[in-house]
Image (cartoon, rainbow, N blue to C red; front, side, top):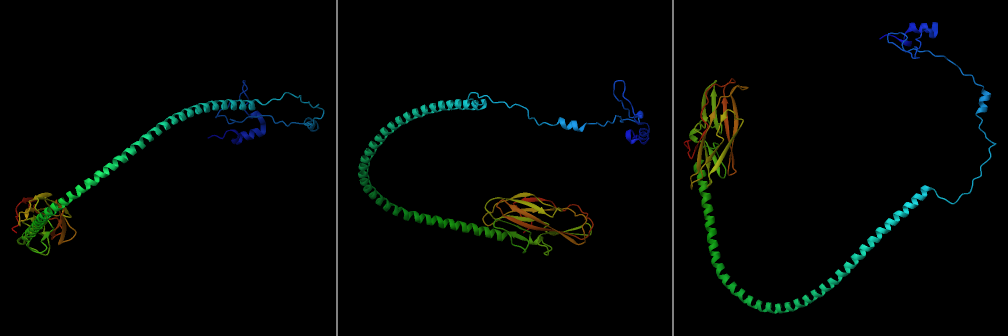
Length: 360
């Protein structure tokens, strides 16, 4: 940006030398015009004057002490009030007049209500007299009714005595019938419980740790389908990269129902992505001492690379039943190498309802 106006040292030097002659003058219209390209842009001139006052005369002009004026005597007028006060009082009178009119209306209304209440009071007195009359009549009727009740009570006592005698005879017979019914019910429950226990015992005979039982359900891996008792559950082994072998549970898992109603078994797995299992299936009801049964087989898929050799992957199959029971079955996959296993899927995920395919 250019240094114009008094920022321009050359212009300031010219002003000191030549005064207002170097500053732009007003045009014919008496207006100064400035241009950004003009170095004297924004600089104007004017005359410096210093006023000269006569101090003694100036002091006289401000002397305001007036002592020659004649005081005015006030003229006594009639008694009056300010209009502002008069207006307030007048408005108050009007308001009070309206309020009195409202109160007169309320007084008339209240007088009318008093008259109505007097009429109601008279009618209530008449009703009270009628109620007294009714009460007297009711007392007379009660006296007559009491006499009739006394007679009826004697007849009722006689009837109750006769009924008690008849009830005693009936109760002895009913008690004997109820005792027989209760004995039959207990005997039936004991028989059902014995049949349930026998059904569970017959179904779950085998190696310890290769079956599980709740009140109404159970599962079992047949003893002749167990090749390695070190792992209590379903177990497969893979040597090298694809040398697959079944250890426990090749023929499947037998699921049992000890109740007298058909049940639904629902299976879910945890930490066992290498295993395919059926999601749910029906298991028939128990027949006397024979448990209802269904066999489920599983399919095994190869595992990918693992962190170390000779590693055993452990998972869990959770079994929930419609009777509310819950069981668990452990599953194991032993992998001899770290590299990915290579073999075709082994086994099938299927269910055989009503059949024990495990040979147990």
